[in-house]
Image (tube, rainbow, N blue to C red; front, side):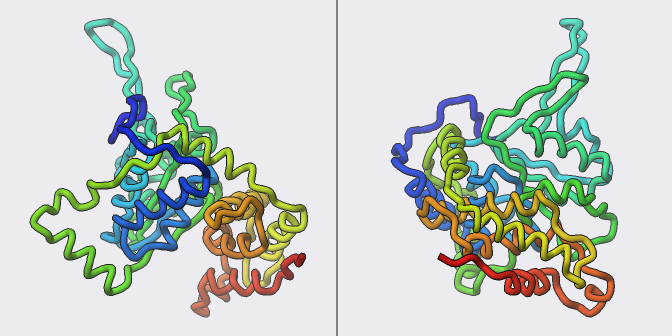
Length: 329
């Protein structure tokens, strides 16, 4: 776990506005994570919206590196759990251990007591262990032996899945999938960016790869940024547009399970974050359109006929978004 959020962070230049914080954080992460600009923006948007992210991509594309880099930009603690079939819920949340010397039960906090939690290959653990994350993701708290413990803000879970290997995996239940505000697809970087990544990693000082991340702000500034993002203005017509898109997924003949109300809420929340990323204090329909695929792709299920035809979820969703009239004016 690195570093301890209870300790004062190293010195940094105060951030004067939400727009400045976002731009400095974006620039700092892009300096280290190469060729993944869209992924970086989506992860920052999820952090600003106070949500969690499901990251799907092949191994070796920098998912762990992204989480650690993001944590370093605000001096937050980061933790990692490697999900395996034998992982127990107490390995995630923590447990109480009887101390013979003091004759008392001592709390051993689990890896969820952090700011940014990487749940690596979350679908390799059985449902009981996956469910251990439900309370902490939704309530930002953990209950151990009847005692409820609050987590220090900010808290964000980034869970990864391998889209290729399905043997020995346990698909996430719909209730847990719905708690991720976005499903972000991370692919291979462009050739030039990959060349730079390989060159850096294979340099004489590979241990220093990515270690020079500058501190942008502290955890309190992230909490303030989340509050400022929530205050971004959204007019009723734009809210109605987000609701119409969610409802259209339920009416589509290509989809057997459409997005619920939480999907519409997430569209607006991420729309606000995208507006903040563009230095605007109000949401426009294009923000909702931009949010639609990452927010909805894990909340819908294609009908068997459409799935067999080879049509992808994103193709169906894009057609639905294009069919819903956007408000004007």
